[in-house]
Length: 327
Image 1 (tube, rainbow, N blue to C red):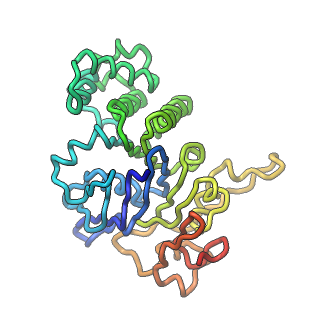
Image 2 (cartoon, rainbow, N blue to C red):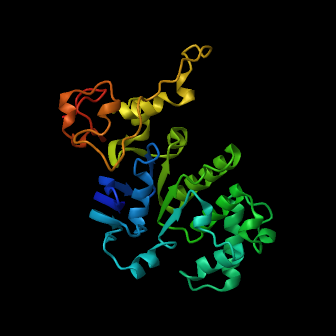
Image 3 (tube, rainbow, N blue to C red):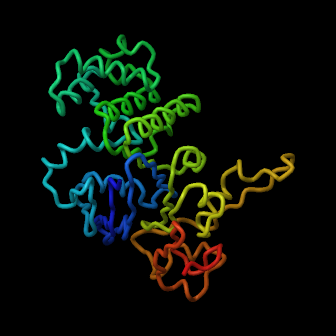
């Protein structure tokens, strides 16, 4: 059953140098129990897409067009009170910086208990037990003893684990995770990914995992959407996209992963293949495909922006895709 439908989403920011179009016509659908990986370089618009879904775009930014429907309810244009009722209860977001979630002057117990009480009519003792359980699930040792402490008494990695525990407190229908394991070591990262997969499997929650780490997406996501310069350039089942990418940008991302650059015999590694050039400024995008200045397949036809064309459960926005031309 489809839970989230994003259709032609457009988000822009007014700056002194002009209008910065951070998200341009992004569309995708997400079913209950499904994990979507949203990947791309820094500045590709993936985080702004996540913020836009939750209505967390503040002036001078605004959602300038498109639709976000959650469980049949339109979110774009809804009053703040309506969105606030959804946030934390039915939709949760895990930020890259845990201090965007944690209040430095309140104890962890206060923040977690109040998060439960804000959305459910339960006693403080029940809310406290749920907080202890949630902290334990993300690997906080002796959670009952750590609960009365303050954010400054935790390391950066532990603060991120607390932020993740808060997001999972109310068993949300949709979790949007913005690179939440970047500050964590590999062991803890694996534990968090396991808990996320368990949440999706047991509760039917949907998950959008925003990252630049293709290795994480390979083991976590069902589908992947690759973003570049504010647009989705390729989308499809994760195995199909990572095994046989059709957009040159997706191919470039995969070639930049060290694990993908070991020779077939496993003994001699080849040089990493770097994507030439830099990500273009979203303030000064030329007409046509934004990737064409960095693409060795570009020609005059790329001066026109290609549509995101779909076939066989996959989509690609490219005039000259690496596989056969999509009809």
